Image (tube, rainbow, N blue to C red; front, side):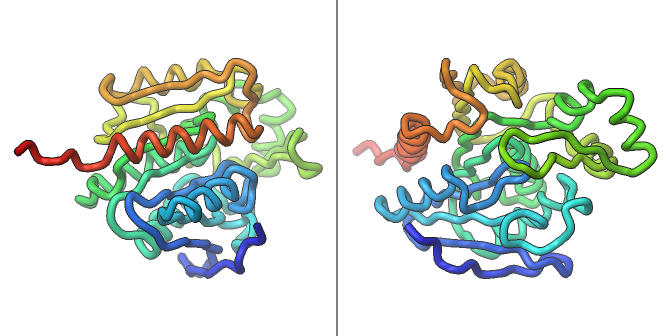
Length: 263
């Protein structure tokens, strides 16, 4: 299915590309990963599923990702969080299920914190987190830095490493790593006030399944489910993974429907 051209929302002088589909609630909001875009396999699959099932669906590209403007080296969790909240508030209404992939799961968890602070806790009715990477800058990137990479950060303000998903290397800036510390969520109980379902591949070489289990330790025990895919990788984009994703979302929609009143 060919995607329609995006709309654009200007957030602090940066044009953010957005695609939204009208439909019934709860709507589905897609939050992509680091260096991914909203035309990726999982986002496109969810858009088609939402169309076929009549649900609203919202997705966007963070600045310097996909069709959005901005420079990648300016990107931080705080900046991408601000953009995600702006898109959420401008293009959705009523209850939504946030679907966050990798870094998008971190953005989703921070969005819930900010919405709760603003008195909007009823806007999120469920969370589906795919290979969640909250606090990845301090938990997964910084501990693995080589002396040469630390020197690059100190001298140039950024470092790069090869990516198996793209000919372009991953770039990590000192600003991103420093800002990540200000957005940490794995520091106490993460109060989501909604059901959470985590999908995690056990063959994930980018975000090990032990990281997902660590996240579970920080979530309230009620309404938290984790599905470990024994042969799944970080992307979880095989046909069987995509089917699992939409089954999970459909189940969460059923779980969050208002219960009929007892006569």
